[in-house]
Amino acid sequence: MELDKDLQARQEARSLAALAQTAQKELARMSQAQLDAIVENIARVFEQSAGELARLAVEETGFGNEEDKTVKNRFASRDVWQAIRDMKTVGVLRELPGEKLWEVGVPVGVIAGIVPSTNPTSTVCYKAMIALKAGNTIVFSPHPKAIRCTLRAAQIVKEAAEAAGAPKGAVGCLSIASMAGCQELMGAPQVRLILATGGPAMVRAAYSSGKPAIGVGAGNGPAYIHRSADVQKAMEAIARSKTFDYGTVCASEQSIVVEKELEAAVRKEGARQGFYFMNETEAGSLAKLLFRPTGALNPEIVGKSAVTLAKKAGFSVPEGTRVLVAREQEAGPTRPYSMEKLCPVLAFFVMDSEDAVLEKAIEVLTHEGSGHTFAIHATDLAVVRKFALQIPVSRFLVNTPAALGGIGATTGLFPALTLGCGAVGGSSSSNNISPLDLINIRRVAWDTGHTEESRPQVGEALVEMLAAKILERLN
Image (cartoon, rainbow, N blue to C red):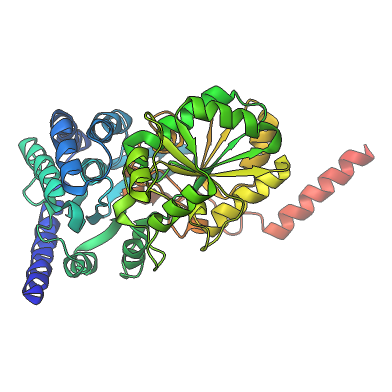
């Protein structure tokens, strides 16, 4: 029976990829205005369905909460559209008369979109919009834990796109969630690029498919509260971020790092705002739940509230507890609190000095999360600059909730639900992925009139420059 399911999934992947290729040939002939009309309609219709899709996602996956998933769906539709509406992606993008160059935007073709269970509906809208904006078609591979809500989201996007003029097949979605179908889709000859958002195994599969891929690494961002920070505002930002959809955004903080002189103030303010600092026994009980013996994150704790997590771990917390905090000093595979935890749980590092904080943040990110996100709360620009020049991340956030700042909701970053981690994080891009990451640039270059004889050689030019400088000094 399982074999039949895999065969059906593979055949469906082939059919959808072929249909998407035919549709993409039609999209490639459309103007920017036509593509924009399609994307605008997707944004409008999807926003109207934001609440319905949020409810379906929570009911099916058990991750997060309906209110914040509704916000995510609106962000992925309305906010993304506002960011890309005036973006030029196809046709002549720039004319550079001085260099005698034109730059022409060219769609990459058919895209395979991998959808995670933590953001199973918003990711569909976001990826479809940035793909179609750039003249590409897209076929989605849903997570088995979120197949129904992802299919519903894809159906809404598909119908909205076709109602605005998109050809049939421009948006597709596998109806059978299986690794066999996903691998067939990623390896399909029609697919030109893979947009991979999901767990480490899925991202590795995308990069090993033999196709160009844009994947993301794990988030494990520390949040440094510097002595120049407003502690109340810093803790408010962290609480807002870490409780947003119960910690399922990969950019959310995973630890708080402070110097000793600030520990008491952070604990006091944290307790006032619903942070529960666990004792050693409680932290040990919860640690056993966070990860499986294999080292993989336990899906049973993902996107659950702090009160629910404490209850699962066998201890009680005060009413109104929002975040659970465990004291930690080391980072590594035997230290579960030093890793990414997609729930409202934080590690708490207390260091002797600012330099020790810097070393610890780098240690944590080197263990997991390199290239992703770091947050600092400070008013001292010197320390912001010092850390920004050394912390190995693509998103360095200042005085903002990391979950919302990282995706561009509270910062000037491009609004995105796929966050590249750069080479240091094993990604092909360090960007918040936008339509401009989904096009190729064709350059049209005219002869500049220079000939090899008339163009100074490098050695000659250097000699002329040095001679001029010597004469200048002698005079």
